[in-house]
Length: 366
Image (cartoon, rainbow, N blue to C red):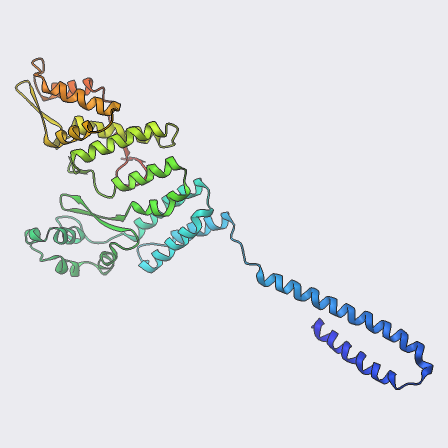
């Protein structure tokens, strides 16, 4: 509006000036005064226009800046909206927003979003199929992964079983492998629909301290599959040895890590599994005062012998030597297990903390 007014003034001044040109010389002084006032008015209009144009130009270039607090709050809100009715497109959009926000966050905020994203997946992957007596998703997973045994179910093949599932569960099965959705065989005919642990690695570890990133990366690698199945060890003896040695080295390399206690817990657990075993995967048998080392345990010991000397490697050597000797003072397997625990100086296992289902250890609540 101001610009239009100035243009009108300028037009009027030019018109009046033309008329002054045809007046007689008696009006010379008036013309001089008039010209001075005209110059002042025009100069003011031009200055105002330039100032307005410059301000407008600056405003066009300014983009809204999302503060760290807003980014964190907004992302939490986006994640919280994902539930059992959401689509894979909505989950994808939430993950995109999360990935964009994470570089702006503090470490404490990143850990909150690790938890929030894990809960988001739990909501999204909520199913309604029955799981008892090999029904629903368990029957589908079993028939899909073990088609040669599917006839044992008496329900047909995986495609046939899938058609009997609720629409939402059929939809979720179609999303497996997308956006870090994992359908994991957890043993004994049971399956779990979950967030793949690699999610935390790809989304968060680039913005965490080295020791924390290394911890999460290793946990994601090991927890991509199960460790136990019906109290039996589900991985090889060499894999047990590799994990134990990794955690021993981690403790040495990162003695002040915030995850040191969990690393010690894991190192102790893997030592137990190598030297003692589990309920359904014993490390050795004991009969007639003699030990017999099981094949998986032998594999772990053989692999450790190829590694540079560490306390764990030396312990494996002592273990092999001790079990090679007759033990006339030991009467049964219970005596044998007590002897090995004492000889190997194994600490008691912590059964109150779970480190095998997520990238972070969690206290177990009963």
